[in-house]
Length: 563
Image 1 (cartoon, helix red, strand yellow):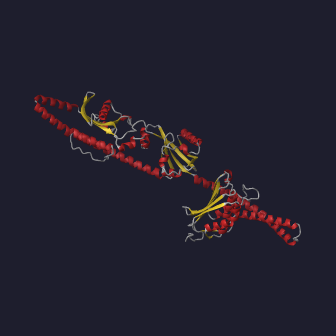
Image 2 (cartoon, one colour):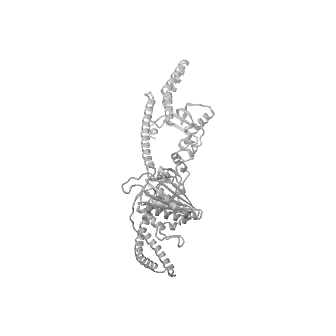
Image 3 (cartoon, rainbow, N blue to C red):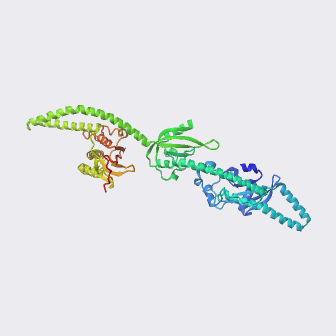
């Protein structure tokens, strides 16, 4: 250091047995002092010793473990991650309270000055016992006032600074104007330099900590084994974890990847390139939910250039991917809708002719004529075909929407009452969790009634006898009304999930449905500026989530049902 360059003979040492930093290991002399302090031979040591042919004044005190020392030198699991990163766990841990573990000493070379003093003492001794006693007292006072006391003052002060009891900016008061005073002045300059350097480090730490904590993307710092050393608040939110300590040094990136093979591929790319950029994969949150992410990562190195871990910035693209899938789905349904409209128009005219002539024949034919029953069957099935054509037209084009203030809760109750006879047939239980504070919204009540009928019938057909259907309403944080329809039925296979809103797509048995109910409902929800989302697990059930905007359609402000 700069101080050692300026004062190469002045030695301040603070050493310990089995230290964190090997440079702080004790010499044989210091080991003897430590043992003497442990055995109680010395409470404090000060003496003049000879080392390498030179005289030195040594002042030493034992280093005793205090309560605050255990934060860094107790159990390694409780130590700051930065200390573990720099020194590892080789030494300096598992200290015990009040244990003497080392020695703190100041060694000052006496050199020619001491020789002169020794000669003077010898001369005075020759002149007489009285002179010797007087000289000894004078020298003792001289050494104490000019050397020992200032050195003790500096020793206490430096120990307080090292232990954190005094800040670096605290003044060092030594009134001596001799070499000790110059030494104190040099110490003061050194402390000012350290204080400025410390302030710069703290400013840099605050700057990067603000960036780390404020980032909207997840930032993870991991060691070479992938164990998470630090994670920012966005990362905790993405992983749905409320306890940061639960992750640190116990959860690795391997645990977050959906599979070990994907983690291995990620590490291979890191090793090949030294970094990865926007690596797309899936992670798993603490609640088991899968998250689509892009990972940008690079290796971390220590002061010697050795790899000591890696840093990763993770962007959650789950919502973006869902929007992309919805956009593709909307484009596909639009194409299907155009085709359905053309098909409906082509079929509509022949159906009209069939129904017209069949109706005329039914009016003219005698009711006893055996052909009357056949004509009625023709008319009934033609009428069913016409209903399908009308549903196709509703799906393929927007019909006139007549919005009005509507109590969604009341509309749902009416539909449940209307379908109650169907539910009773299979002993299906319908549970309602309707938010009483839900505001009225502007929708076409008849069209929404059709949506709820279609959705409830779909759930009814999915459950077994004695099944359960839940329907919930609430207002979310983005000012949208949410309607959830959940059942414990057979669920939807993953390969069918993207096709359920297509016209005529159905997994039901022939005669149980046309496959138009969900597609028509999808079109109506879109007309109202809403969204319809499906989540399903085969064998466990399905939940449809309908989102409708609360904003007024005709300039009127929505009112609460309770107002």
